[in-house]
Image (cartoon, rainbow, N blue to C red; front, side):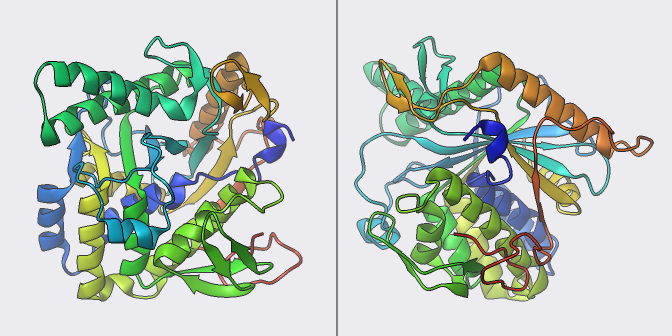
Amino acid sequence: MSGTARVVRLAAGVLGRTVAAGLSLALLVGTGYGWSVQRTLTDRVVTSDVITTRTAAPEPEQPFTALLVGLDSRTDASGNPLPAELLAALRAGVDEGQLHTDTIILLHVPAGPDARAVAISIPRDSFVTLADGSGPHKINSAYGRATDVAKAALQKQGVTGAELDRRSRDAGRRALVETVEKFTRLPVDHYAEINLAGFVEMTEAIGGVPVCLRRPEREVRSGVDLPAGPQTVRGPDALAFVRQRHGLEDGDFDRIARQQAFLAGMASRMLSTGTLSDPGAVRRLVDAVTRNVVLDRGWDLDRLVVQFGRMSGGDIRFVTIPTGTPALETPVDGIAVQVDTAEVRAFVRDTIAATDTAAAPTSSPPTRPTPTAASTASASAEPSAAPTSGISAAGVTCVD
């Protein structure tokens, strides 16, 4: 299956987690608890010196591009190990000691009110040249490789504890940002990262997320054990729902389609059921975000709220970079996803240009076909007309 044929099915895995986290921040400060929530978030959200290529962050009304990362990490945002009982509840599997960024997304939000954003997915196994000089590797290893190198150097300098973790992880984040920028030629303005625990805790805080399965699913590795039809998933069951890839016909691509549907359900839950009028839910969301989300230092809360508020007014278009064979044999990383750097750069350039042009108030939508097919997920989670068969649920897309 070619990359262009996959775009209808490929949504950002982390978009179901990191964008939801960003929208949570924006929605939280707009509640009746706005002032105290904003003060708490400002004081407690973990930040990172990760963006080094920008001299200044874009103003809230300007277009921006954020790198959204879902990290398979056994620590919280501050580097503290997650409790063993929490890891068991997450069904997180064996810790292989590597910091892999399982999902990597470029989210571009154009200027103007009700901007229709575009999310560009970079498959985690894309075989690219890393920015740290180590040569071609899977892109999801950029973070972990740079973190390990920095940690070894810092330990020789006598750095230990939380400071060691913070500085080495910052180096890993910067290496990932630089790798993505060099690979796509798209400058990154902001960075957001969330771990497994944050995803689970957010779904618990809002009382679960509505989803719909076309058929029952039971699979040991992910821990998924869910019936067919519309249902509400929360906590470990929600994580299993979006993590399963074994036993699915298209593996990772079916998993990403689930994550897209999950995002729509999460947005629907938060926007339409009065969740954020519940002080207990607000408190739980604040705790989840501050424990498990990392933002770049330049993405202050006021700016983030305005920027995500713009995005939440319109649709999000989901695409993925073009890819070749998903079974590329490599000399260093086993089987990887083949990519053509020149083709990827042209695709990203054209996608961003089309997005910005469509958002311009004096411009008509481009008549030239865009490089790929696309799908949309409304922030208000309107009922999907796309599947024409199988089980349906109001406001939720049924998926495999």
